[in-house]
Each structure stands twice: as C-alpha cells, then as structure tokens.
Image (cartoon, rainbow, N blue to C red):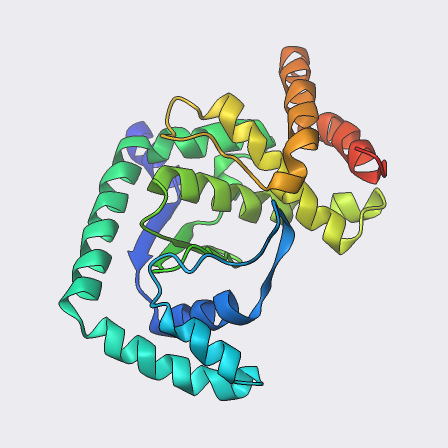
Length: 246
C-alpha cells in the first residue's frame, strides 16, 4: 500500500498533439517578437515549421487575416507522411525518456522549490509542436524535436509550479509582471545544479540573463548548505532583479 500511495503522488504527463494550439503557435512564431534578450534575435526560429508561413506573414497585415492562411498550410502539412512520422516518433521517444528520468526530475523540482510533490498539478498535458517556440499554460506545455523531453518538461513544470506558489510573493516584494517573467527564466539555471544527472544538456536560458544566472547559481549553492526555506534564497534573488545593473 505504501508503494501504491507513493506512486500516486507523482503527477501524470499525457503526451498529445493539439491542432488548435499548434496553429496558434505557428501564428505566434510568425507575428510575435521574442520578449527576452536572445542575443540579437527578434523573431523565433521556426524549427520544423514550413518556411512558407514567413512569406504569408510578410504579405498579410493582420493576425486575423493570416490565421486562415496558415491553417491551410498546417492542414496540408499534417497530411504528409513526414509530419505523421515525426509526431509519432518524437512522442514515443519523449515518453520513453520521461519513463527513465521523470520521477527523479519531479522529486528534484519538489525539493528545489520547497513545494511538496502532492501540491504539484495532478496531471500535465504535453503537446508536440513542430516549432522551436514552446509555450506553457496552467498545467500544460509544448515540446519539440529539438530538445530532450526531460529538459523541456523540467523547465516548463518548474515555471508552472514556481508561478503558482511564488508569483504572489514576488509581487508583494515589489516585482512587476515583466520582472516575475524574467525571474522564472533566470531561475531555470538551478536545473543545472540539481538535475544535471538526468538532463542531456544544460539549461542555457536567454542571452540577456547570462550574467545574472551565474550570480543566482552561486547564491543557490550557498543557500543549499544552509538548508533554509526557499523564500530566503528567493529574497536575495529578488533584490538582484530589482537592482538595475545586475
């Protein structure tokens, strides 16, 4: 019974493909700029999305007009054997990799964020995308063929659970919406400290956060030795965020 109870503590991840969210991601990949400093890159790399949608975006003056045009390209693309194979193959690999590393990643995140595993979402839905851009929602996120699934899942679940538990706390400490958005991306550097054994590649983050991520990582290494609450570490990081020249 104890083993069964422990097993039920682990959130479930359901891997799917959602055409509506995929369409939105294709449109957003074309019309939205990258909101963080990405080393000079303003537009998203389309990854495996057909390049022709870039031309459609350039010739269309509104998002409402571009959506049906991109949907036609998407519908045609999804009927190709290549697209069918990629979705099936990458989803199978993702499921296999999560089976190998998922529980350890979740336990690591729980310990890192000082959030009991039972308070995590009971289920996450992971949707395959052909694009490089991988957005997340309340209990869902996208994944692609360009990153190992435990890397993506750990990164996105960290966002979800961190914001759920600590976004209000950060607001109370004086951080605005954009600063909290920056903070959630900066903090993924902690994955390289606590989950490196289970991730194929280090979490690189955004170019503009490179310097502060190293400072945060050093603060975290010192914090781990104290075994104090995560909020005490977070307070120090918030002060860094609020300092203009970090």
